[in-house]
Image 1 (tube, rainbow, N blue to C red):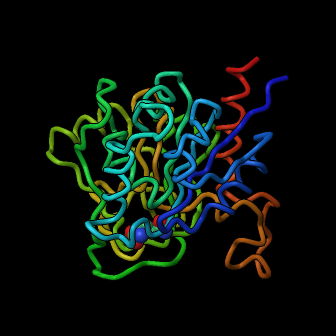
Image 2 (image 1 turned 60 degrees about the vertical axis):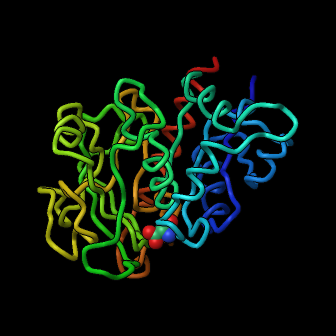
Length: 275
Ligand SMILES: NC(=O)CC[C@H](N)C(=O)O
């Protein structure tokens, strides 16, 4: 049987790669490789040899130029040394092959700034939204409630009932669309996958602190129309077991953390396409 292989890209300031690779393995991938961006740029590793790409969180290039902006340009314009192609050619092949990509926090910022999300009409590499400074003006490091949109096409959130509880750690998490037309289209196509809410997961909220950054339409996660490309500000890889929960010694909790389902769904999707 073919091994399902996940790749987590690191380097230039990411800091969640070990947790992310662990989540991929727990979720069911046979292998999860932590690859430095330099290994892709040198041609030593190729995206073509993997089935799932996780763009993980951190402080790429120290957030200079705005979070993930420099890495977005690196992905778009850097050439792979020994293959006489650009890294973006590999990335576009990956997407055209129908392979899923999950961007978390800095990785979500990267996907949006490269134009991989929301990528209307498969129009990749055109930036139509951004993630900018939190309205509160401060870095936020705590847990949030995320209301699920069951009508979204995201393959990652299948099976989530009302919502999930996850940690955030970001300074630039406010989702802003370039125009009201873009936002209308995101809403019309159910591309807003998760929104900040109260603990009952009833209504999305713009109120601080439940909405930690002032994100338009309370958006915490979006996907593309295929559901295979998704990004979110909260960290699913940081809640895979009940002992990751801030109150695990005081509350009765299920063994599995709320974030693991995203990785399990990715692994199951990949497996279903390989057999
Ligand atoms: N944890 C993260 O990935 C943070 C992303 C980015 N550095 C920010 O502060 O917004």
